[in-house]
Image (tube, rainbow, N blue to C red; front, side):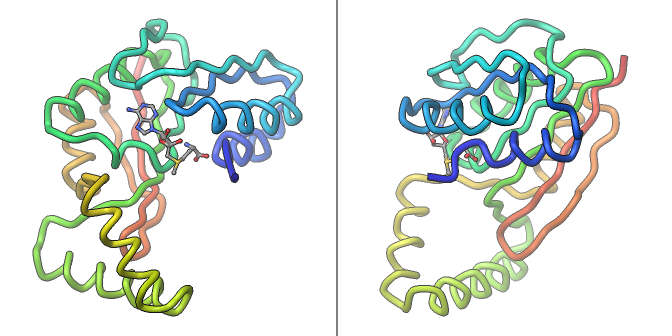
Length: 181
Ligand SMILES: C[S@@+](CC[C@H](N)C(=O)[O-])C[C@H]1O[C@@H](n2cnc3c(N)ncnc32)[C@H](O)[C@@H]1O
């Protein structure tokens, strides 16, 4: 299980071995694994919080960086998305930033079809057509990805002043925004 990858990459990128980290997930095994891996990479305090990002109380104006890795596409309706982005904005300290890496959909139907065809070809190369179909059927059942463009607009609406895209490749993107002081 590759739990906590983005927190680990962030610690490596910062070159700072004394960062406090809060790790949040619904799943206890995911948290346990991420806690071990991140705990080995920092001398700071590592807290695990088992709960639903839609409900957990986070301290106001406290975090320098929030990374949301492959999780927000599980959110369902617009109200969930808006409330979670608002919570994350509130939890950031002034000058703090939110960075999302996730599965995304697309606003323009033709672009969406093209990108999901590419993703399907990648999955087929990886594990064959049956594997591709299994992944697509899981996504249909369990996930509600949203376009990067839609999420960046929502970020601005909840208060982020500067938003930007780091990377996008077919249905996967890395993007985020900064909360000004
Ligand atoms: C693909 S895994 C990514 C795990 C981790 N973020 C990482 O990158 O290593 C998706 C995770 O999202 C968690 N999840 C889904 N919905 C959630 C929610 N509403 N609140 C908190 N965690 C959630 C699941 O428990 C699962 O562990």
